[in-house]
Length: 252
Image (cartoon, rainbow, N blue to C red):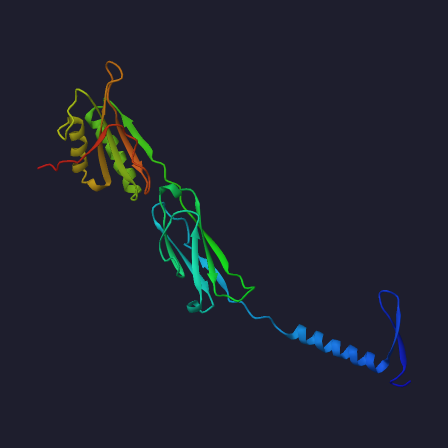
């Protein structure tokens, strides 16, 4: 059998063509070489790209930082940031931004997206990261009372001090209802009883805020209440209408 032995090659359409064995062999090897070269050629590698956000949950009102992490030469790149919440405080156009959150963001998740210009065509250029924002903590009424004997009031105060001592990040609020015919000043006897016991126990006065709440007696014989609140970090002050903050006068 010679190299010029003729073969019959049929196409999809069923037509037959006569070609020489030599030409067929050369064509096959040429096609195989092209395919091998195409398979062996690696595409250009894209640089890694991601956004790193804060770890954990952010308290409303705190700042959140997002940072681009890439293996590319940042000198050749441009960055454009967008956020789903909060306000970009600084860093737009750079690899890192600081986002100021507010109480309006509480309980939500802020997503920061960065679009990068300067990568080769086909390489990912948009990435994002999320940061959960904590819900505003709820305040709680620990105690409320009216018409108690002084020793009973002191016992309630001691329990209030103990709770705040065991929860050092909480702030205590004492709201004292004041009737129209009561004295609205630091000389008020009910206020003085609380302050004297606070100082007797040498409890840190910075941990507790006193509020006077002026009210009109809803009915005859109504006894005004004193209420103890605990407020976690980031929590609202107790809802109090017609209230005024009053500061203890140190005993001489």
